Image (cartoon, rainbow over all chains, first blue to last red; front, top):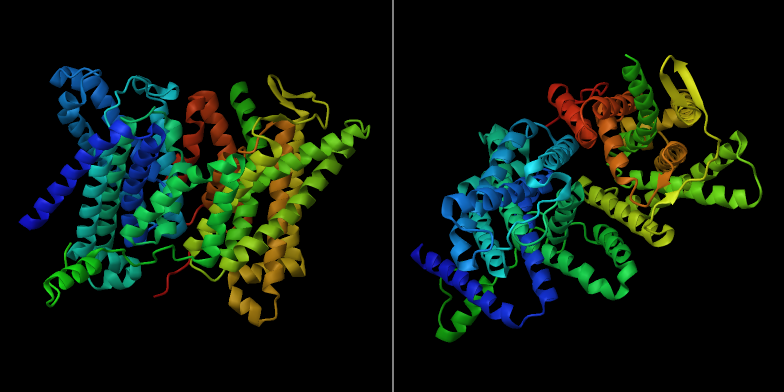
Length: 333
Length: 301
């Protein structure tokens, strides 16, 4: 346990140092794509918890992202100067604490929205669930569009840019480990049981509705975190949270492989980078992108990774075994 | 009172368009259990086909007249019927035996493909639909005015819906469609050519979407390649609202949707227009999850 905490802390530290080193010399265009990749990785992993692991079908993920984005932005703009005396123009170091708080508030409010949406809708199944989550996502967006103090249709201007690659990467790591550990836990097994056969799970005493709502809430929390990071990185407008955004995330999850967490990382990275890589064919890139999606679904419907996880553990074991020349030790994280 | 009647009239005209699109959704869903996300984009292609064929015909010196409008409508419906069949054959048939999610993502892919091809071929800038019929105002009662375009929309869509209902209930092909929707494998064992029936379903559904596109061009003459997204989603909501798989349900759902949108625009705020559809949907689904006219299907273990 301690070893893992140390490892986690080391990864986070390395990520922050990496960001300091990278921001110096990196092409801003590449930097921006990396940040967007990171945000999409968080979104895809969190959606995978509902769509892949629990086997439900939600197309309202952008709504929770919007809740997180707007509550955290409002907290930073309206509450932070009064509570902490940190003005929007404050340096990154002075603003780090309030920013972390803003991210958490964004995540928690998104989670609350997740409970409110999940309680009624998680009783529905299949296409009905899909369309109800889509509906809630759109309702959230339209509701925000009508709140004037967060800019309404003008967009929310004046949110300081506090997120950077370091923050995003750190939350990617946190999201990954939280969801991975959840899947491997007792509760995660219950979620997998619901995916495999909901009726059988119910018969074996798994409180299915409660677990589905819980998965939905956790998923909404991380979507809110991604939204909070997004709103402190780039211009905030409700147009970023239409149902096309939800669909984009679903495509990432499906491409990577439903239920495969590392697959979601691969899927999100590929689908963020691919339209950029196809930029040489600027006008046709979206045509190629959508055609690729159809071909992929026809030829490899289980996604790139299927249910499998990509892991460094076997490699690490082999390296360790070679170094010691003895039997492989216990599997690393 | 006048304002209420006026909003109802506008809502029914707009709702007929939703109903036409919703019919295609509900037919395809009834047979394949697939949300055909590309359906809204077929409607867009219908509007653009009408736009280009009207311009081509107009260049040939044809005067705006009902016959001319009818010709444009028929061309658009035929072109989209072919498009629907092609989509089914190349994209949906290969994934028919895969999981429903795979099919859904394929449909999303087709939708994106049509949108981006639309932007590439038609251009991203909005086009102004030519006037097929000269506009005229008709006063229904004191203070309630509709245009002849709106009347055309309602009349044409009602005619198409009645025609579809007759087709499905009175012809052999219609009976075969109902059989395939009821149980595909059993229908196949009874000698019904399932593939051909599915093709026909896509042709009819896409032709209806094209008709909706042309009718929208009459009343709201601004068309652009992304115009199908929102009406597509809302028409799907209309189909679910009425009970997906049910043809009268789609019509009722579409009209309910159109009327409630106009009531919200008239009495609340136009910014809530996109939300009302979903609020109604959620209320209906929470109270009666199969939609207004949907059948209850018992789940087997």
